Image 1 (cartoon, rainbow, N blue to C red):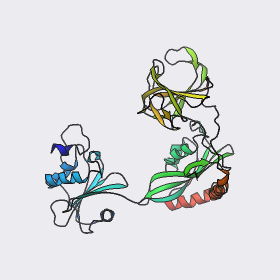
Image 2: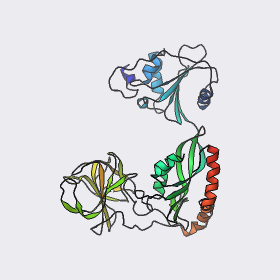
Image 3: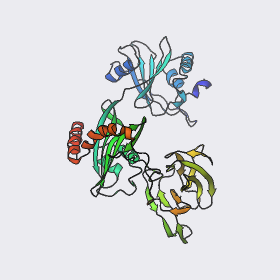
Image 4: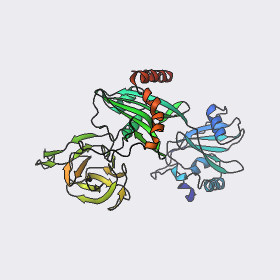
Amino acid sequence: MSGLVICGCAGSGQEPEVIPEVSVETVPDGEVAGLCRMFNLPLTDYGQEHEVIRKNENLASILQSRGVDYQQVYSLTQKARGVFDLRKLKAGNPYTLLYAPGAPEPSYFIYEENYRTHVCFSLTDSLWVARAEIPIEIQEKFVDITISSSLWQDLEEAGYNPLVANGLSEVFAWTVDFFGLQKGDTFRASYQAYMLKGKEVEAGPILAASFIRAGRTQNAFRYLQDSVPGYWDQDGVNLQRAFLKAPLKFSRISSGFSYARRHPITRIVRPHTGTDYAAPAGTPVMSIGEGKVIERTYTRAGGNTVRIKHNSVYTTAYLHLSRFASGLTVGKHVAQGETIGYVGSTGSSTGPHLDFRVWRNGKPINPLTMESPPADPIHASDIKSFKEHIAPYRRGLEPECYKRIALQIISLAGVRFN
């Protein structure tokens, strides 16, 4: 048995919970019929047992407690190799046991790895293990939101999927300061919604979006150029810049660039040539642009620090990290948006935050006001195709047209439009 115990979810060494008496139903339902079709199981009136993985449980303990002998369980663990790692059974994840009519032991054990993926273990004469995914339906949805508190909260309160905020932050990462959103700022967007059984389970890529502030509009359109997706404005100007606007997502600025700031610990007034972003410990910190790591060190003042040289002009530094990203070494080339460490409070620090600094030609500059040149525009040979592609999205982003479409879609979904 010792070889089977490690195949379960990790436990703390405590005694496993007592499994209650099995309550078996004999009426098939739509969910079980769907699982049968997914794995090509015979459609019959199975007895059903629906449970969740409990703390310290593993496949062996679950099946043996239902009367399956040790040798059969062991053979099944061998069949699972290359299909599913049994050590990744997670406490709290649901599973279903199907009993053939009149059978005292289960015929199938079906584990729900996530909302979409299931793993079936066949305990019939022909032992096998298979993995399958429920097909995802893709729908195009719209959001139209005006900031009153925060992008995430406003989306959620309006009945939209708040995860759309992540997509918008990536689209406008180079042109919109998400730490400085103001009341009255408006986002409109068309995006792909991934639907499972009529429910939106994930927000896919943004297809088109606009950001409006004080009557000025910044549009963004998704387009494949050289088989690589990117975002351009209506004139084909690339919205991606040489640098991201910020090295981490959804935080707040706790201290700005200053040549005369009183240090919170020493109380001495001295320059603070960087920007402090307050964020929870462990928040990933990204390189704002591609470049070469020239320093990975610990200092008494800055704690764990990473310094990156991007080109002959710009250098950036990231201070007070709790730890460095795995594999980060001096001399490594990092990509824009690559995680280089995690927010912490090492060195001279009063709490978890990132001290972010930028130098231009060796002189410190304010990260919040620096400019960055645009990346490559749409190729001249692609401009006609690009214009044709964005035309319907561009019309859809117009306020009146957009609101009419959004009203229709939200009405169908039963969500009130504000």
